[in-house]
Image (cartoon, rainbow over all chains, first blue to last red):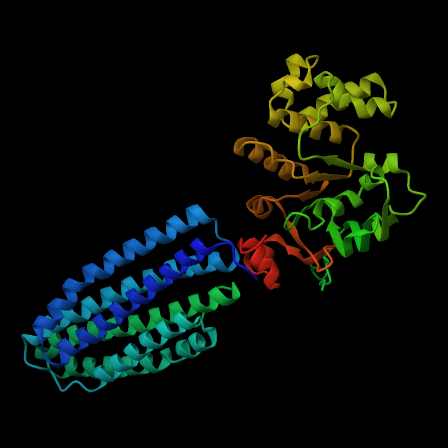
Length: 219
Length: 269
């Protein structure tokens, strides 16, 4: 059926492309913040912190664009769900960017201190989280709700690792009070990763909403 | 292909169907304008008919009070039940039917008479007493929110009213004969946005007592003003069919048929 809304479709496509671009920036920020920790690279950590301004600016632009489309095109049905979903996704991505900044700040503080222990489970947790972020962006691009649901189910794996790390760090603190500062920073860092994975689940819910019009709870 | 259409029944609920069109076919001479159109309209709800130009919305609307009788060479088959009586049957008292099923048209069409006489016209034709007519004129003008605007100039010409006021006067005229159903054929298409919203507010107030069926090209109006929406489309032979019918929330948020989605999102039509 011939479309009569070429301009509108183009605006939606540009909005989607912006969401994916923002996702890629956040994905990179998460990866770089973890690398800054593992490689003890303060310069990289500071770059992550500085680049968050770009993420925030893109977030502002996308929100503005979504608002303008809603105001001028009066979208309904799938079009409306698309815009509402994108608005929520960019909010989640912006918060993920903030978590990456949290990790980068933690890295800067930790890098000035002796390493508490070799990082084993944290990079594993980060790898899982990064892979979920990457995967959910793929599900957004493909608008694949089955894939989104499958990704959300994998949040448990991140949670299991988080609890393992949490117990281990608490043990470090109990065993030796001089560990408290470093362990506490690492706890916050692990929490940032855990929250990123939660936000992936929120985006998965948006993908399902986009398809079905139903607001679901996947966590 | 036409989907089975009936308002969703809630188990245990007592849904009252006021109008029930069953497999209605309608012909202007050799041209078939409606094909197997079915629609069960709930009492005291607002049902919107939407669809592209020429899809048979107005024709379908006019089946409910046999306005098509005024067009020579027309023919209808199927059933249109009002409270169980088939209005298409030859024994239907068409005058009484049109009292029972009032109509508001696209353009306000007040008679070139006074405001009072416009509203009193139907009751007068029905032979009601002067006192009853006085009461019903005031009541109808109050129902349409016109009373305070015109009570001091009831004897003046209705043609001096604004477009929005004229349309509300026509609605008052329709309500004066105490209909059970009000059909509205794009009642706000000639009005400005404020007058349009006034009509929509009135519809919400009136639906407590009347069953309303509205044809509209304005999808935002259908979305915000109606309880149920039926989407119509021409088939390959250019006869109108009901494609999808359901609660307005579902039609505008989660339409089941891709043709409905394409239409309401403005991708054709």
